[in-house]
Every structure is written in C-alpha cells, then in structure tokens.
Image (cartoon, rainbow, N blue to C red; front, side, top):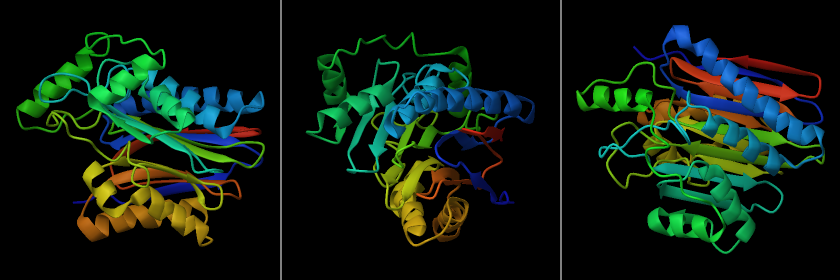
Length: 304
C-alpha cells in the first residue's frame, strides 16, 4: 500500500532557508533527531542571510552542515556502493544568471557541495565526473580525506542489510538539499547525496543533474528533490516543479503536483522542497518520512 502524499508550506517573508534530510523510511524513534539536524542546518544557512550573504552562500552553508552530520546520506556517513566505498553526487544553482555547478561519482572528499560551488564559480563547465571531478577539486585546493574518513558503522550496517536483499530500514534517506531566498530577492538551490545503498559502481542519480535534482530560477522558483533518482531524472522533477511556480502556483502546490506526477506517471516515490519568488515555501513527500526544516527572520519550523 503506497504512502499518502504529505505536503506543507508557509510564508518566509523577506528571506529564509528550507532544507530536507532525505525522503525514505527512517525509524519512527529516530525521526525527531533527523528533524533537529535539519533545523541546525537551516539555522546555519539563515545566519548567512542575516549577515547579508547571498542565497547561494546560504544553501552551500546549509548543505555543508548536513554533509558533516553523520545522520544523513551525504558527505561523511553517506551510503556505500557495491564495493563498500562512498561515491558522492552534488549540485548547486543560482537563479539570477542560472549559473550551476555539479560533481558526480566523486570519491574521497568530505564536502562535495563546495566542490560543486567551485565549479559554478569557475564557470567553464557545469558537471565534472569521477576522476575528472577529483582532479578539479584538487586543482581548486580541496584536500582529499580518503575513503575511511567518510565511512561510518551505520553505513556499513546498511550495506550489509542491502546485500542480503532487504531494504535498510532506518537509513537517513536518499539525499539532502537546501533552497534559499535572500534579502535581494535572489533564489538558489543545492542538493548532495551518497546515492543508493549497494548501488552499482558508476551509478549516478538525480542529485547532480540540473533540472532533475536541483533547479533555481528567480523568475520561477528554487527546488531540491530527494527519492528515486531514476524517476526524478526521467521526469525532470525539479524543473517541473519550478515551471509550476512560473505558471503561478505557490511552492507547496507546485511540489505536491510534481510528486503526485512522479508516482502517478511511473510509480516512483520521493519528495521535494521549494521556494517561489513571492517567498512562499513548500514541501511534499510520498514516502514514510522526510525530515525538513525552514527558518526565516521571524520564525522557524521543522518536521518529518
């Protein structure tokens, strides 16, 4: 029996940050802890905005906080592939000039979102893969930490469960992400992940794909998705949600329709967060859980 689609939204006002910790099926007793982790990350992003930073800076900061939190399937503590190694995917995009940067199948670095940001700032290419991504990272001054520094016991246990043919219940989720609106009305989005537990070597999901896992356009909205990556790619869910907002839908309705379409068209599950140009935020999921948090000048909210 499929899970009901759950949606929520609100108004951020002048500026704000929304994050997600991954759609999936986290054990009920652990969900509050995941929501707390999201709230810490959203607060970190909001502090950037309070100090006059850009939406792009805010989503990078929030995503880094989630990458550094071993509760989540990104950065340190990300899930393991069939060889027992971490391979990261990440992307980031700003909505004014539509600049974007991404890395995929990247091994040995703790904060792939910042390497994606470096690709955006460099501007020559959008997406770097595998050893090319690692070479680019080293050239930009990022220091490899090695596989062992990234692997946690929880990730090893999840891999062992998956190798036995079972879904690792209690895993954090599929991805982390952040969207932000700054005081100048600019939007940005970021997404980062370790992918799918026991994935084939070389598998790349939606998180580094602009339009599938991440999208930001000041004229439409900012979106980060999580869930079944192959489905997100096939239907370009991040761009789809943005186009709904361009057409006048508020963020909550835009992501709800997109997640409904994902399930109805190809039977895939997942979730998404978004901010529209008017400052409304929204989130939607068709999974048992998706930790999230939103922070703005006058308040904050979180859930799972």
